[in-house]
Length: 306
Image 1 (cartoon, rainbow, N blue to C red):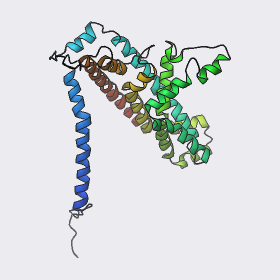
Image 2 (spheres, rainbow, N blue to C red):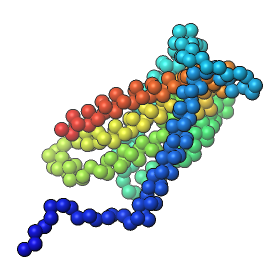
Image 3 (cartoon, rainbow, N blue to C red):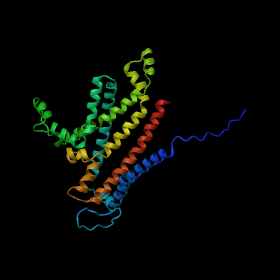
Image 4 (cartoon, rainbow, N blue to C red):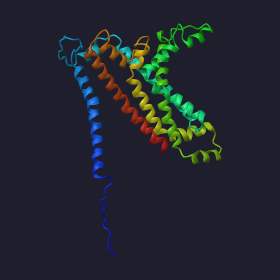
């Protein structure tokens, strides 16, 4: 009897042309990432070390860490307050977006026409784009002729909405949530459908109630999905500036670090160097928040599934 060799057979899964196509695609993707991801980030860090204004004919000189010193020692207008606004915005968006998306996913995970239509409507704001979303919310909450004011006016309630120190930030949070709700909901639906139905059938036989089933089965089994959605919500809200620019331009308590960096670089101050230093701080803040958050959520996954 012939003895079988202990070495695995040399089986080629891809032909040479297929491998060339695969590595060519990887190379193109890597080139785009370096060109449009890494290169702008490096350039931004370099600009943050200068007094570059972006104005034609203006001289530029290397200033080292002067921009960072200015922000932390001279109380640059709005910088410290922007950190508090950023925290408010990030926490509000993360909690509301995930709570509402999970509730919708639980209700709309079926295959019926109504559930399908409602899922499409919930996903629609992502397709519309940030500019359209901002205009829609401004029109809805127009203090003069908006439909929301028309309804509240019958009850004698009047507000400036996005021009109000009280309501500007909560409404901006809701607008951000509305724009990204569909994506978060779809991820949750995928997590719910990945849970074997036999688990719920066995729980029903044991007399487990709806809330107990969610708390003891659904929630622990969706730990990995929660990690994805919470991480995306935190990073997305940390780096948001365009929607805030459209809705309030950072006024009325919505001056997050992202919009402050944008307005410092391209607004009346036209200080690209200082604005770039703010964006570098925002990048570092995102890293310092994301890494411990992901580590905590992954530890939570292991604990719940143990």
